[in-house]
Image (cartoon, rainbow, N blue to C red; front, side):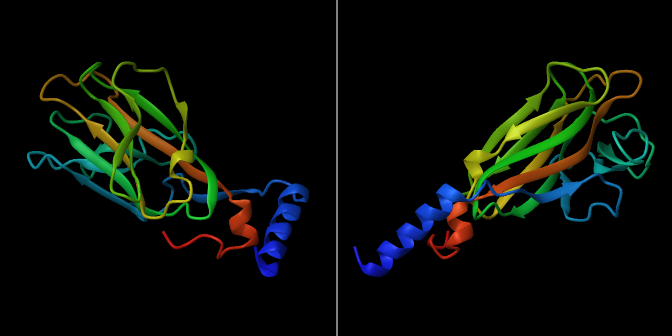
Length: 204
């Protein structure tokens, strides 16, 4: 081991044993109070329908707006269509240099049980999609909080985080129906070694 390498290792050891944990960083957050879609990409994989995720004033966990799974131009819409496959994606999210991460959001749901529902899917830097959360089997009362451990993606750039809604070809519940998402936040903790020696890791 060279003298320079020994000094670097010693420096890292000293910093890691004497420096308190780094503060949490917000990678992105959205309460859907601003212009939509903004940094999101939205669409519908079923060409037979036109609805897609959009901002909505019918329900909100905080503020006046949320994201609704079946927007058709009506900001107060409270029902969805059959045959939907809509997505709301945050593209090119980077967790490079971070050692842990957490995705949180609030949701309101009323859909046909077992057949219609919402998912969160994540594509990693290698192009592999993973399902991180889904709900087709329950309609909880009111707004609920979901927290997703994103540690498996720590250190990776080029991520895609996708909120997906799927409905089959029959049955939409009466009353307010669909999925509303609000107060989305991705937070992460900086990797200490990366903070001390930002060139310690080779490019991804």
